[in-house]
Image 1 (cartoon, helix red, strand yellow):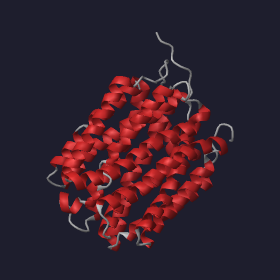
Image 2: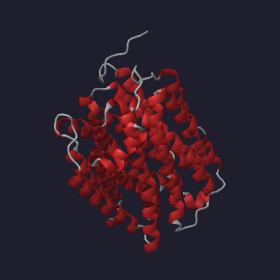
Image 3: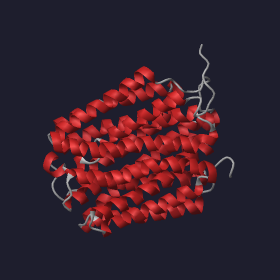
Image 4: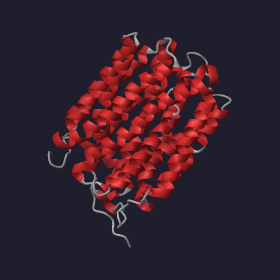
Length: 407
């Protein structure tokens, strides 16, 4: 039997590189719905103008489904391994571009989002967990930074690519071709080249750390976990806003799909690229201040978007929101990994990702209600900004440093 390399980025460079390509393609699959679908919801998919709650419904469904699959993915991966769960996630994505292409109404988009949520819950969770298997504790910040950089670079570039593909080929045809290529490539790579990374002695949740016990500890039993979990949930409000309403906001102000894609990519590329700095930074200075500062910066960026009326202003504000996300996103996950023991880390990550991605659903409902009650899209931006600042305050008050060398 071939002996596995020792944990560490350098000694597992080939598999880490493969997993980074996997999460890039996972992000590109998510990016399939980021620009074209919301912007053309009225003209292409039959959503009545001003129906913000109906428009938000597909992100509510996505958040609920992905949250549940994040939770079970952690348990499944501890029991059957990382690779089978990754492959199952790619298989779940196969119907998504076909359903968008065939959609006769918004219900089809919501149904496609169910499959997208299943796929994202399984594949993104496994890209993260498998890399944590392969790396050392002192590399967690860097590992998470690389993972989220690759994933959200995929989201951002897909937003631009699908915008131009829709202009050149038509919305449905462009999304079908793009989605088929991305998903087919991801599935093939997972089946052929991904290596199982679960520890040789399978990690089991002990009787003292049953799934219920881990869930309870993280949700209300340990204030360090609770502070991180609530921040993870609220930060998804930003992504829900960028996904649902930012394309509509910009489209109503006269931007074309290509320009909308660039504004949204300013958020996504900044988010992705600066995680290469933010992850290693937290390995040096700790997780606490990058997490708190990221919540504040991202909230300010969101609040600034509706205050301007130029492409440069919108792109700059979106970039500031992305910078805040870059600071907090890998480091909230790294903090969870710091606190969890190895034998229940997969389950702990699943619980955290359950609550975090439930933020898509909660945030989509909140911003939909804010926009509907006020009659203005701007109200949703301010609601999300206030929520981020309040959550950052809670993280500062109740949280603590988790880095193993800086506690």
